[in-house]
Picture 1 (cartoon, one colour):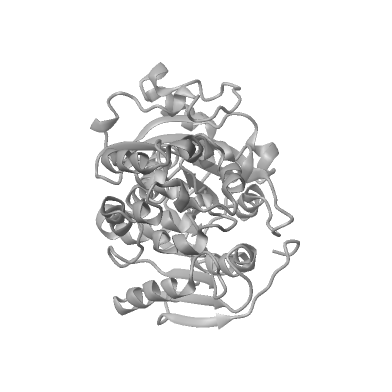
Picture 2 (spheres, rainbow, N blue to C red):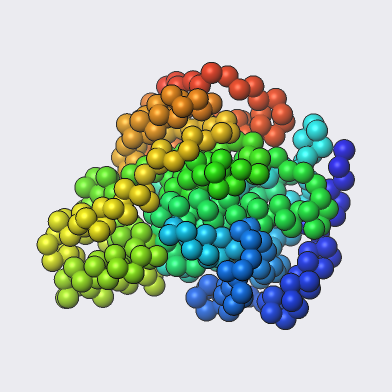
Length: 433
């Protein structure tokens, strides 16, 4: 069995940090600093020569600022921020940050491997300051009893308490390109590459890895699963979990507009155009002058506050020609190339997909279509369609089933059956999820 005693331990990581050109690699990894929003923290800026590095190469690393253990729980041993080289939606060199959470004690698979969950949060924002690496200290640590949702940090505690390493990337990148699946897929895969590079430098243990996302997190997770065979063929991913799959978000604008999460449309429009200056310029030219600043405020407002502010509003009314502007050819091209799941390679790893039939945000029929295509192309899928609940309740209703499937992968007891689609009836209270 491979020993995991040095894997990601602080002295070993400090040695890596010191090798990254000393002062230019960022603050001392042991410096007691408080978290700053990414737009105010110089650590989030890539070195000038980042474009000469390989995808997944570590550019900077530091111990996470503040005290994440006090927020997440004692299951967390230590945590790091890694800034790494990746590729944006247009194929240009870029960078992103991931947060690597190390459990206080490791789980060993039967074959002696460490195991890791790469969890892609649904941060659904065009504001870089809503990225998970910073939101872990704020919004992700809050529960919502009204909606029956535990805090996201309590979920991380649950994963870490199993002895599992957790990786959670800021997959929308430094420009918060929300909705751009190519950016999200690249950044997710390259975050895993960066973690594996660090593993080789601090212990060399082989890892079993599963990627997981819910709702907006599936834009990154599904894209990564589809892109892996071509973009990162050397990565061995043990499985993928997709819940509340957000496929073809632009096709759901009418469903979302004037509803509780209408502001998500603005975040998508600003996110999808973030890396395409001509499309962003067109979008801004369409905005009604009197409400233009209100629309663009999403770029600087915390995600949940934007959702609350725009709740119930007609987002099309912010454009001079209403819905026509939102579906102009220059934007539709981005919707078609950037926002649809099922248009790339077929995922090569086993998948567990869970979705509420009554999902009012992400229609189940669009998930049915993707699953059907993947199955025809030979993918191995267990797809559970829940007869109760909706998009929000399935967050908690699906977790126990996803965890059970995940344990089979990590325990090396999972058998790849013929793809299965089945309806289930599962309702879980927040206290027992």
